[in-house]
Amino acid sequence: MQAEQEDRFHEFVRARWSRLVRTAYLLTGDVHHAEDLTQTALAKAYRSWRRISRSDSPEAYVRRMLVTCNSDRFRKRRVTEALTAAPPDRAGRDEGAGQVEERGSLLAGLAQLPPRQRAVVVLRYWEDLSEAEVAEVLGCSTGTVKSQASKGLAKLRTYPGLSAGRAPADGRGQTEQGERGDSGERDRRARGLRVRGADA
Image 1 (cartoon, rainbow, N blue to C red):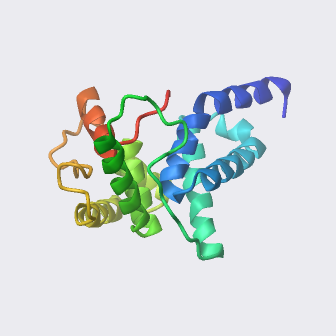
Image 2 (image 1 turned 135 degrees about the vertical axis):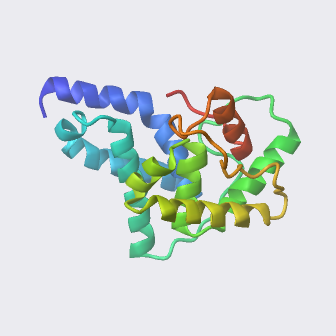
């Protein structure tokens, strides 16, 4: 890799590391697994960075690698998970005990979802991707994304400590303007997941 490309790669890693690790945490349920998963995805990205850097969205490309690497974990061996209420780079010190408890319930609820359903919920409502974008990342149809999201949210709403108001909304009724809603809608979804966003 040429020096200029390598510098751009390291700049990308510095800018996106926290966000990628936090997404990996929601997928894996373990801080150490999340960091290992992110490092694995970035190592693969490094080998193909010349091509990835020319894509429309290098971050989306690496995110897809992250999800694929996580799926490989489950195919290779049965993984025991124990999600906690303390994701990496936890933001803010003003959270009340109730917020921490709610977030813990949601994270524990995510651990009960099958890997594909959890990936859909995380990408759709934490990463705020459109259904088409989630489908592209996971290599499936938008119909599958809708179905998995609906089933995943239904399971979350039945998990102890979570109510319809605390679980992520299903996003029905969104306009076609990018299927992503305005900043207020994104904030509402982030609050629903009880996990603070990382700097983009």
